[in-house]
Image (tube, rainbow, N blue to C red; front, side, top):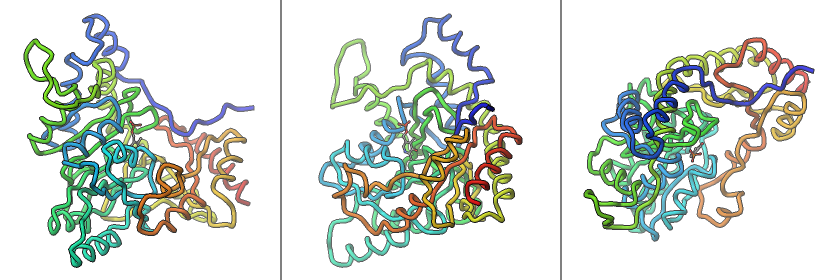
Length: 377
Ligand SMILES: *Cc1c(COP(=O)(O)O)cnc(C)c1O
């Protein structure tokens, strides 16, 4: 029996050990230390943002981004129904209501045209508009921001990008040509959880080009404590700062990000080729963007459930997961207002994610493909 192939695991083969040793040697293990600021500086440079604020998790980053964007309890914030639950949880923490928007069939990302139409009609009849849009770039695919940016320009709706899954994805053409996901909206958020393209064990980042938003975000993540030696706080803050230990991992991982990205993209291209003639729909790869190819997922074309295929793959040593259950089918968000949801349901019903760790070998990938073909056949 050969070893099981994991779905998506970290690769810690760079300077991780050396930098962690440095934290221990200098006694800097908590949230004050040189790696935190270095990680912020280098991350901002990597994605092309002016400012970066390191947070304890991607969810914390989203929560604070929403708060500094001015989201308050009576507000509505639009978000994809097809996403990981954290996208909506962050909205719920602010007391605002998520408006769950269906996906486009071709890109799996938010149906911006549908949201645009909704907002335009509400504006025409003088009804309240969403305060913000949290655009999720799912699974390593850049969302089409054209209608979203139009909503910002016409109606003043704040744009927050949930780029937790798509660090490294970029726009080739369109209004954001040449930009990285996360740097086009007012604020962008990333995650460094264990299964993301790079990891700090747990962690997140907010990026923005607005110095005021950055300053306020940093303030909120450090208990809203005022400078000086005393304990004076001017509002309710959070203990959301990243630790120096986690940031040390982050700096080491960031050094390897270009190689992680080319590995992910090569894995995705090879799966695309190997699966082209199989009864599956390949993941979106629109020409206007470059995917980071974080989690390689296909849709099963046959009358078979993705969850069942994922279960059989896992049973045969190819770790696999179905795609998310849409938020409108989850207990906490079943009553949330929404625009459609049928596309998200079909993605969930048919979706299967395949092993795609950056260290995946071609032999392992061939085994994954062969097993999938066998199950489908
Ligand atoms: C992983 C993820 C998050 C949350 O990040 P954590 O670091 O796990 O808190 C948020 N949104 C999306 C879309 C994610 O995939």
